[in-house]
Amino acid sequence: MRPDAYCFHQSFEPAGPSEFRMDRHYLLYAMEGTIRLEANGRRWTLPPARAALITAGHPITISILSRLTCASVLYTHAFAPPPPQVLSVFDVSPLARELIAECREWGLESGPLSPYAQRIFETLVAVCMRLAETPSPCVLPAPASPALARALALTEELADGTPVFAEIAKATGQSPRALARRFSTEMGMTWREALRRIRLIRAVEALASSDAPITEIALGVGYNSLSAFNTAFRDLMGKGPREYRASFRD
Image (cartoon, rainbow, N blue to C red; front, side, top):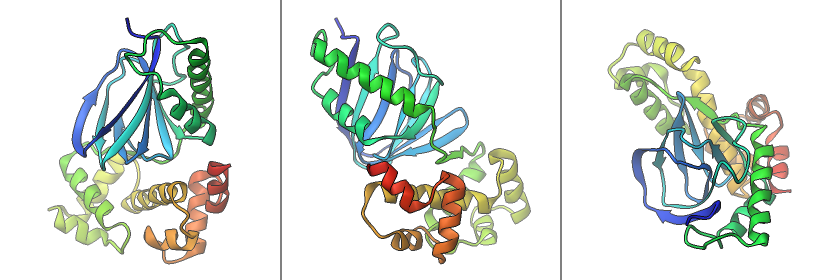
């Protein structure tokens, strides 16, 4: 008999998109590596800085972008209340990371939970429910058409340099006007807004996973001006990069 809550801890090689639908609520977390998550017309990347809380029965598409070690927690409807949303992606606090690491001791074959294990899993769910109340803004609308998907992929490939919109349109077999219309219609943003979001998402990941100087990170994601980077970062995250890094690590 499966326990009411357990941790699934395993490593995977990079892999293309696959749809998942679980019969339990679950916390999806990458201890190492990065996952791309798509659901409800939106797309997130999940490095170790972020996790996803997903309601049972809700389909998601997962791509493994780099060699992955995950430690995901699954629990029944009876074990704890359902997540507040069908899908929430949020920054993982140091407390949540420690609780996830502790939960790895109890897998699917561990049998009934001890009182101690029960409290650990209950605390983790409660902490993640609280974190999910502040979802991460590091999300992009998913392109609906293959033409826009190609353009967005090329934009991501060139984002740390100086991509030119007209050249991306030409390289993907579209006129600039048609491509601009696709960004507006399918993603609700301009190409330049999408490029800015891509760069800032990468900056958030770098701030959370490395000790690199902020100037180095800004230059590495494609910004030539530290002041412009700081302003754009604050507009998206509600705090400056230095403050964000400190709050993530406290």
